[in-house]
Length: 259
Ligand code: HEC
Image 1 (cartoon, rainbow, N blue to C red):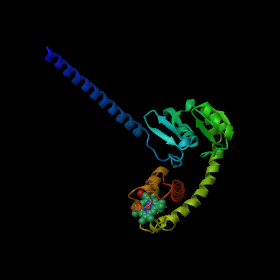
Image 2: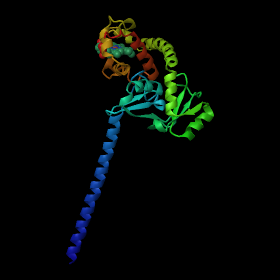
Image 3: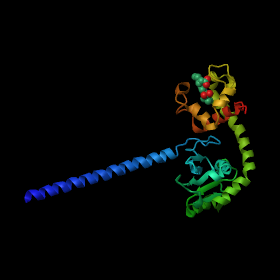
Image 4: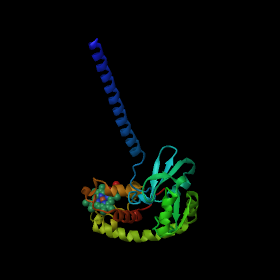
């Protein structure tokens, strides 16, 4: 009799242990899986339109979620609005980083502080998104501006697009001058030729082959920072603003690819 009870207790203990192990294993597995799908979903360094660093511009980052599963991040509502207009039917949702915390949430919930004295990103009139009205009001008290919905803010972006583009063209001119200095400092011309025009040991920045391969601003930035490029001499040295200016300068030298 005693033996039977001991056997039952032992079996019950074993079953309990198996259950505990199974539960902890599946939850560990689920954790791994959810981390994995999050990183697969969005792991992007540069804005596809202007090439700006999405870590640096995280506080104004907007993401378009396409119906085919692609998630594309932009530095600002300005760049996101340009692609949103092109892909309207294929965009399932848009989310935005909270200006204060950097956490993403749906634009439908967003309160935009528009026209405050906080510096604008790609735009003359500053536009910052907040996930709560209270937070938006806090910043409004200190920086001014008015609080608007996403729809209202987006229509202001489209209405101000020409003015913003003119401001950006002017800024690009200054960036190119700065970028040329950066290129001199990092000795790009020693290998890519004077002013990147060739006759060095590496491809000219002005050659058609270069333009064809460097098909977008993100591709160009990745190529400059590639670990295999120039014995990895730029990793950890070129700062994000230097890299942006350098990219804009080199991008401006490329010959347009013949269509
Ligand atoms: C030590 C020599 C050297 C220096 C310095 C150097 N590069 Fe390069 N670069 C190369 C070589 C070699 C290649 C690969 C072969 C090629 O494209 O000619 C290359 C490739 C590239 C590419 C990719 C081109 C392609 O078609 O794939 C870019 C963009 C580039 N360099 C930009 C720069 C910039 C900007 C600088 C300065 C910050 C720089 N390089 C400095 C040697 C150099």
